[in-house]
Length: 561
View 1: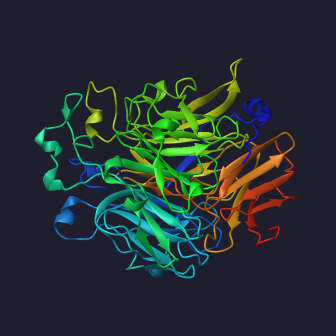
View 2: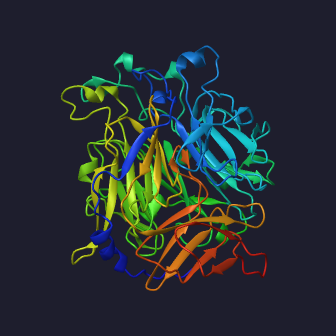
View 3: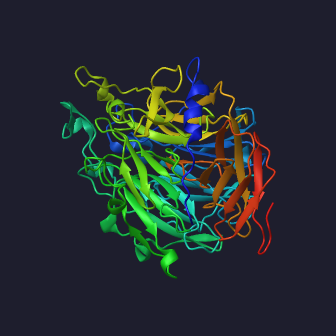
């Protein structure tokens, strides 16, 4: 694929017109009657601090985003042999509101829910669900958009602590594989509690981990004709000696060779970039190249406590960049592309380093929130130690969530810059997973955010900008009905934008199979080009803006529509 640098006229235009906002961009309300659970309030063990999982997808096929909350449990419930709290599905109304789904959508509690992944696993046209656990992960088939049915013979093995998952067509057969990111080996009887005083932070006894505990390697499951999964981790390169404390994952064709790679954030160990080597041979195999690619360590060459991950072409050079949220005392990382397959952490020059040192970041999102034509960032924050409220720690347990508005390339050196401001007027909280999605279909990306032992927050985008937008959904031929892994490129006179279709949402979350494009002042598109996972290419013209557009993959030799 030839990558052509984009013209940068939008960067100058955007800040002069669309950045003026009378107040915070988001207005917050809580999903009524919902509160998450993750262990004891005092947080004696590391199991109790990562929080619940979140999935947003259209499960009932009505076009409105639905929401699955994957809740946790308590150690008392586990010790008593009781199941964890059941995941709950809330069906979207299309106006930003939700109602709890009926009995056919009920999901029983597992051991301790942590995360979620969603896509059309069996190729029947609707969205299926994987619930990740501290325990055995579970697969739920969507039956004709009317309810879930658990696939008992899923192929998921053992009991691990899965945090995040990602669907991708790793082997090119059309059926979607599943990558599962695992954290560490945890057993309460083998891990020192906060109450022992063995682990300390700024002079205070705190929970122990992840350092000193055993990381667990990530897993790859091959899709067996839409019926079940088969683990192929060891045979394809995901081996125990490569294990990190995995937390977040995104699928992305990072080397622009036509197949899907995996970027995984690791806590207190180097981040991993797993290169899919299918394009160089017939056998499915993976190679970890994070250090060589420049995305494993921070600008000073140190590993960080990577949590959330988001990606997009932030500097408008035609290549994806990657943003990582990290632990307090560490700056968030911004890996800007140097060329195909190479990045460098440029958080400090972009103004993202110093301000993030006092915050502990989790969910990260990359969208054009202000509709000015370039991508912004949102970061959800909250500490892991309740002791952060103690005098002398220069920190707090509850923290402010942050919007980082893209200011474009500025100055003689054309450096990327951001404007940091509170996400909303709401009081600081203890945020964890989050997803950006247009809940009310007004074209402005909203945010769903989860709190640790708290509520489900719905942040409505109240932006005053008048920029144009387009949401693209894909309908693929064969088993990959949602076009996961496709590259969609919008072209206009003087520029373009290109993004990848994915449902992996970063930290413990899954996003809808759709792409939101903020177009700013662009009023007319010349064409849309799609590179489908099958290798087919299609071109589409006469596209109206400010709407949801569905594109159908052409059959062999066809043009698509």
